[in-house]
Figure 1 (cartoon, one colour):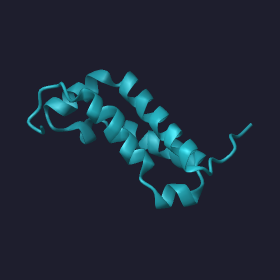
Figure 2 (cartoon, helix red, strand yellow; figure 1 turned 120 degrees about the vertical axis):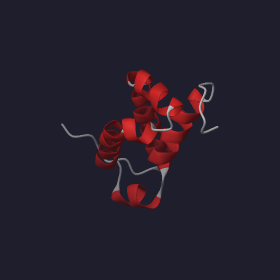
Figure 3 (cartoon, helix red, strand yellow; figure 1 turned 60 degrees about the vertical axis):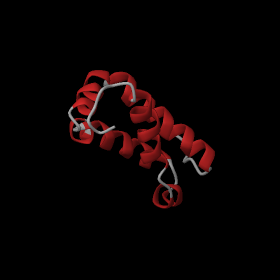
Figure 4 (tube, helix red, strand yellow; figure 1 turned 135 degrees about the vertical axis):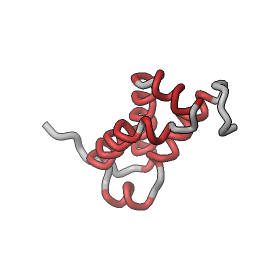
Length: 90
């Protein structure tokens, strides 16, 4: 049974943050490597795009096309939570 499409910004933000949390949880080593070497978006490209497609499939086109909730969640959940890792990017 397909999920109902998400049409509220609040629910879309929750979904985006949940996907980003899963990416963070299951890709810890890649994230650390990517931050240390300033290659995060290269080493996580496939995982981030897979998450984006899941997000796109669950939210209304209006929300997907007019917001940056998913990208913000990636930054908030993955990058900000790893600020303690030594890197030349900060």
